[in-house]
Length: 259
Image 1: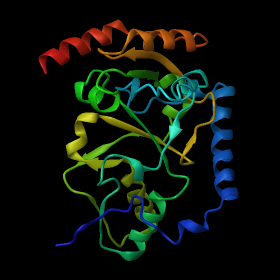
Image 2: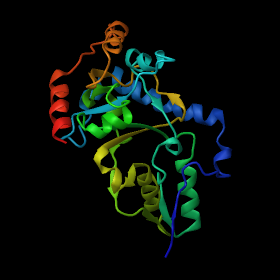
Image 3: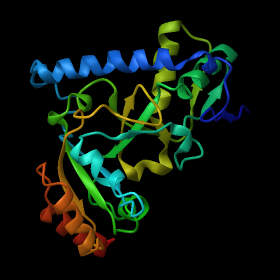
Image 4: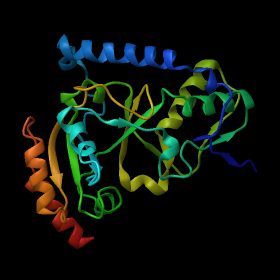
């Protein structure tokens, strides 16, 4: 029986051919396209794929040592893109490798410097999400309206698909291989299904997205968020319309007590 292969973080000789100039050019082209959509008013013409999900949420905790890391993403309308190798799922990007060439392509793709990942959830009131990603309910959650950001309407933003077993990479046509390899980015084990995760692929790792591309709508405080932290938010985010959603907070209170 074949064993799953875990490519995230593995060295690949192919990835060393990507230099800074190539990566910067890819990011530049991507940003130009996104800005054109925003400035020309084309965003309003984009279809709302997965139309049942109009808003997504990003859980976080306050960085006390470097609070600017908390507020810059809000005021500058940007987020940090990470490589999937640093995530808490040890099976990130896993697949059954039945073809050496396809397996090498998958490893190159998932570890490439243009495969940055930004994670969201479509559930704002899950107690485990608040416990795991918002410092045991002491942090906060940022609400994004998908219609406000072209990035959240494009092909690079999709829901994660949860599976009992990893996908299988085998000999297939180039088009099918490209499709299958890309799907690995949006595939996780079913044990993580409670997260209801959505992922945005950004063409750069360990970097912020370009300012202005991700527009926050609201900040939702946790049940244990200190008043001092709330006051910091009110002070630092005066330039944008950030508010505490009491309806969601009330729902969290009810759900937390019931669960």
